[in-house]
Amino acid sequence: MSNKKSNSALGNLKIIGIIPARYESTRFPGKPLIDIAGKTMIQRVYEQASKAKNLSKVVVATDDTRIADEVKRFGGEFIFTSTDHQSGTDRCAEVIKKMPGYDIAINIQGDEPFIEPAQIELLVSCFTEEKVQLATLIKPVHDQESVHNPNSPKVVIDVNGRAMYFSRSPIPFIRNGEPGIWAEKHRFYKHIGIYGYRTESLEAITQLPPSSLEIAESLEQLRWIENGFYIQTKVTDLETVAIDTPEDLLKLNNLL
Image (cartoon, rainbow, N blue to C red; front, top):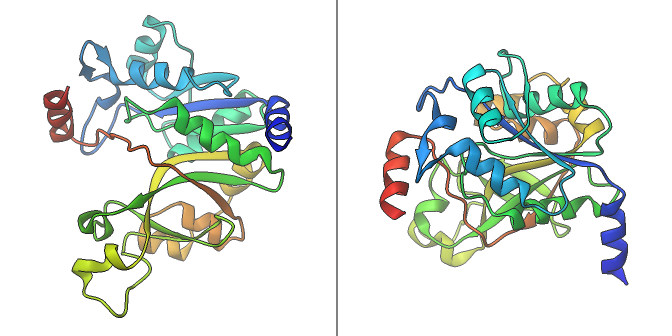
């Protein structure tokens, strides 16, 4: 009976998947247009996102005509957004202002060409609870390298799955154990960078000034927590493959 209730709750929601995509990138300019086995990265992300069963629409949010032309070429939908945005969250908020009427917005990373539709569906399932304002995914970490990698943010959660804190440092600190065995002493979680927002919450968080914790860790989600918003998490065992640098693309092409 609970599953029917959950499905019914989602069925009443209008959910938009937004793929922020900008051409300029410090580490990898033109990244959305790179070729991956015969298709551009933005096309692969768009096609994967479109397979998610609970999205009403998928749209690319971009500030560049070259990306817009590519989306138009493969038959996708796009919307132009400002060049001044500091984050994908800000870009998503502009889309919601220009395309009102949606209850939930899903911020889908534009540099994960093989994102699993099941991950998007899992994230959306957080919103069967009306009290959920913001949501994201986390993944258990079993290796020492990931635990101590500052480029892989970690998260601690409470008994209800709400995020308590995000950090580039290993959290929690394992007092009785050498750093090399921390992953054996505690279940660590790393953050998977896909977000879901109720649209009214999305508008609210983008009106907040940068917070001290956000500035310290360079993690925008800390601004939301510091201002009293809570972030619901769901655990996924699916791994994501992000393309941040030309070296990442080379590794992926070798893998393919």
